[in-house]
Length: 302
Ligand SMILES: Nc1ncnc2c1ncn2[C@@H]1O[C@H](COP(=O)(O)OP(=O)(O)O)[C@@H](O)[C@H]1O
Ligand SMILES: [Mg+2]
Image 1: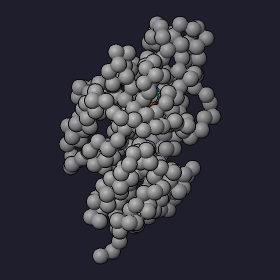
Image 2 (image 1 turned 90 degrees about the vertical axis):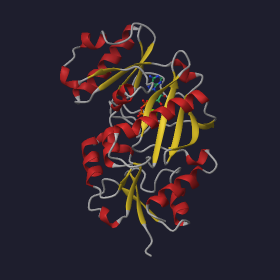
Image 3 (image 1 turned 135 degrees about the vertical axis):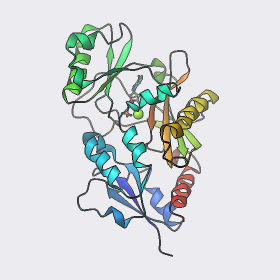
Image 4 (image 1 turned 180 degrees about the horizontal axis):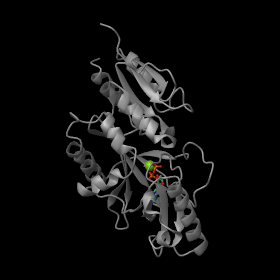
């Protein structure tokens, strides 16, 4: 039998994968699978030379989402499936989760085609408290800023920020800043092959307005955490909504991460459902690397 070959898709800035994913290569080799990091938009790559492409650290796709989705759709064998990725690159998927009864962070949406003027944007901001402006296509907190509703210069900065996103043809999300992120933190719930694997805590990331010329991603401070029963329930509901949204996809997704924040009453709500290129934080949970490597190897029959 020939050795199955897998491409682990990454980006130019991380040609050898992210440090958390790099050990997958050895773990897969131990299972009889050859895994090679490949830059997703490197010209001339023969993707048919691989039995499977698994997306990992393609974090610059937010700069060329159209190219990324076209690439995803062009691949013969991809996980997660192309239709799932195409849906998941734009956070407007949150509306589908809302409709499926999954608790999500309340959001006001601005469509670039509506040509909102400053006043129309301003009236959609909350009257008090902090709030967040971000584009619907983003990763690593890019183009994401935090503002104060009752401070006039801060509102002005927020209007400018929203306008900049809209002028580039992108959709805007306005959310209240959920303050318990500062005390309880954000919880990432990692699923492998549809099964809950482990939870991680992410420290709060937003201090103030969006800054230009940001790095590829904001440095995240992670630690391991025990998920509460309420967190398990909220994340399980998000995962359980997926078969209804993707009737054409057979069986569980290879990987998923559900990011939760506590709302003001302390109930976990979904901030983000990451099915495209989630960091899995494999090093933070014993056994997680083996579980992920086993799941990938199973998909190529190894
Ligand atoms: N409504 C919010 N309340 C509190 N913090 C937020 C909110 N929205 C975003 N953040 C902060 O910004 C970070 C990035 O936002 P997120 O929606 O996860 O987008 P990305 O796809 O860039 O990760 C989060 O990890 C969190 O720290
Ligand atoms: Mg996030």
